[in-house]
Amino acid sequence: MIDPIDLHAYVDGELNPLERSDVQRQIELSPESGKEIEAIQRLKSLVQVRSEEVSTSKAWSDCVRRLDELDKARRVERFVGRFAPALCGVFFIAIVLGGLVSRHHEAGGGSSRNLTAMIGRMHFDKTETNTEKSEWLNNLIKVSKLSTPDHLEPRQVDECEIDGMIVRRVLMRDANGDLSVLMIPKKIEFEGFSSLPGHPGYRCGQSWGRNCIVRPDGDRTTVITAERPYEELANVLMHIKVQ
Amino acid sequence: MLFGKRDTRESFERQAEKVFPSVLGTALRLTRSREDAEDLAQEAIVRAYDAYERFDGSNFKAWMLRIVTNLYINRYRQRQRGPQFGSLEEEGAIEPVSLESEIPDRLLFDNVVGAEIEEALGKVPEDFRMAVILSDIEGLSYQEIADATNVPIGTVRSRLARGRSMLRRALETYAVKEGFLRRDEIE
Image (cartoon, rainbow over all chains, first blue to last red; front, side, top):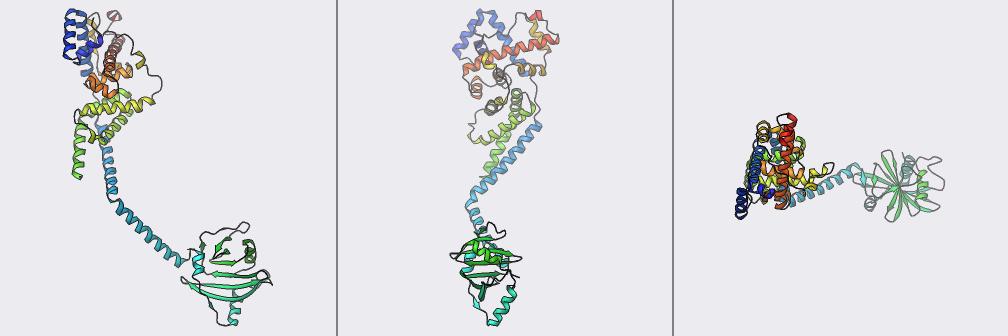
């Protein structure tokens, strides 16, 4: 009998002419091979004709929907790809404008500020008379056991306008030297400042090479600055109560 | 450019819709699960659409079935639990498809229906079943089957011969079980 693999290939028409005529010659000599060929052909046709039809309508509509989504995604990709530089430019301008608007808004609302820049722009004018100074100080710094220790002496009061805010500066002196207290009439966050351990609510940082301590006082902010350690500044600030 | 893309989509959809019954049928016969088959067919359509510009224009159906088969081999088959016995049996002797008597063939072919063929196909080990499906149901050539399944033509020939032989035995088992073929008629 002929190799069964060759018989299957013969039925499938997959032999070259030479192999085909060789198999045909052998089939004529072998009735068993002829029978096998008929059986293969019957099985082939049985499988081909009677295998079940598969219903495809829902599956096909799902595929079409998926292709639609794919097309949509491609269109977006193409658009982005084509206009990427322009989109980048638009985003850049939006970011710059947003930054400017935000900066302007902050200046008005006083929500965030860089202390270094602020102090750099300060120009203080002297108040008119010593009497006025004293009155203002008496109002500003409540004279009490805690707020005005004997050795803390107010020396001068100045004020300046920054971004529409009147900022007052009180120059003070104690046994360790001069220090400045700034009173800002708005609540302000200082960039780059960190919290001071042991003093809840106090934040410390540097401005113009000097140590600063910032303390929120209700809707105002008090800043003390001098060339001395944070802890010492914090201790002085603890004795100053602003109303 | 826009119209070019639209034309591509239309041309692809036209051809894909025509061969989709074969794609889904093959997926179903390979996975033996409607849900997996629909996933597989859909994935194959998306892959084909992605690669449509690289299609050489020869035989779209064979190309699609190649994608389905490759996807199945690479993804679904790895997920299946249990060993695959198909390749272990490739070296054994091939039984003839024909039987001693002509009566069983007539009885068998007169009584068997689609569902039984599908069930019998399901009993044929996967590699052999794949060859039978692609050749006898989908009508691919040996070369196209070899391309689709990533095996040499010689392997396709032997898998096909062995697969048909196994299918025939599975159909006989069914016929005996259903009572329209007696055991002594096939022995």
